[in-house]
Length: 189
Image 1 (cartoon, one colour):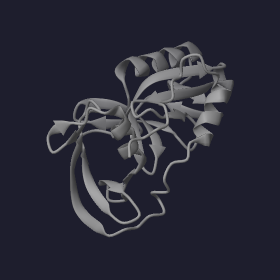
Image 2 (spheres, one colour):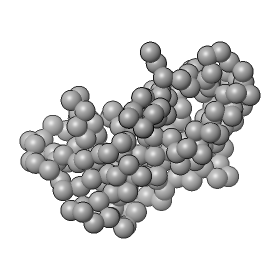
Image 3 (cartoon, one colour):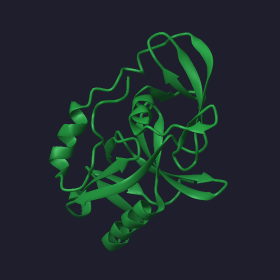
């Protein structure tokens, strides 16, 4: 059954109203399910965020949103699709999600930032959903923890928007405040 909830859009919404929408979303408790491993799903999430099944792109956004709700990352780094009765591997080239838009309210330590994900979800940048810079073969990759070990890579324009805010704040090291936490915009050493 396809996902029936509409995707969250950051346009024209306050962060207080956005937080209510996020809180009202009832995602499956995949962190509590421990079914038997059943093999590979035949699915892959490409570096650009396109979902594939047996080599063909999944063209229905509702199906991608549905699959994204039953995705988690295992302690060994594997990504799996989980239901109460089965667990299947899924290949992820970079991160399962991309942060495609950003909305900021406030300034300095009082700032709050939200990100819209390509999966139709949204995430507030806070202590539970931190931002870090991962070093990859392609260079630094800004990433946001979403849930269950899953990350969203910030799209380049979104990262540049975030970097502009950080530069305007003038903090040293360069970084950004959101929801009372500070997030450095340089790789951890």
